[in-house]
Amino acid sequence: MKRKGGERIKAKLAGAKVRIWTAQWGAWWRPDSSGYTDDIKQAGIYTFEDAWRRSHHCGPEKRIIYEVVA
Image 1 (cartoon, rainbow, N blue to C red):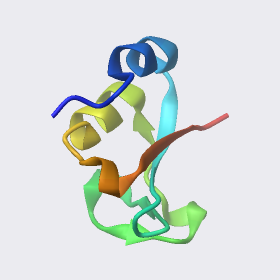
Image 2 (cartoon, rainbow, N blue to C red):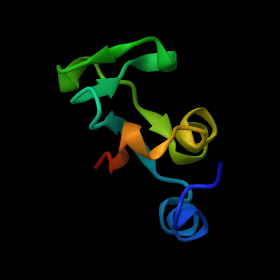
Image 3 (cartoon, rainbow, N blue to C red):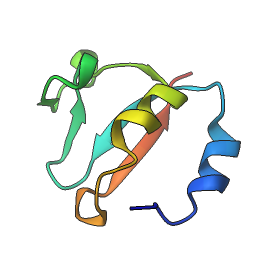
Image 4 (cartoon, one colour):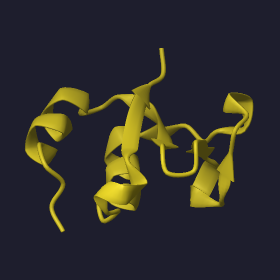
């Protein structure tokens, strides 16, 4: 499955550090994709490229959002 706007997203976020949010569960992905948390302090921080590799296969029902970490 290809995510709509994938190439644009990849170009915009290349090299960024991000958190992965799934709106389906209302939670952040934990480090190493080991479950979910609603506590942002426990959320994993990924390079965008790693986050994309781990989540690009997710369907639209997951409603994945990448939040850039300052």
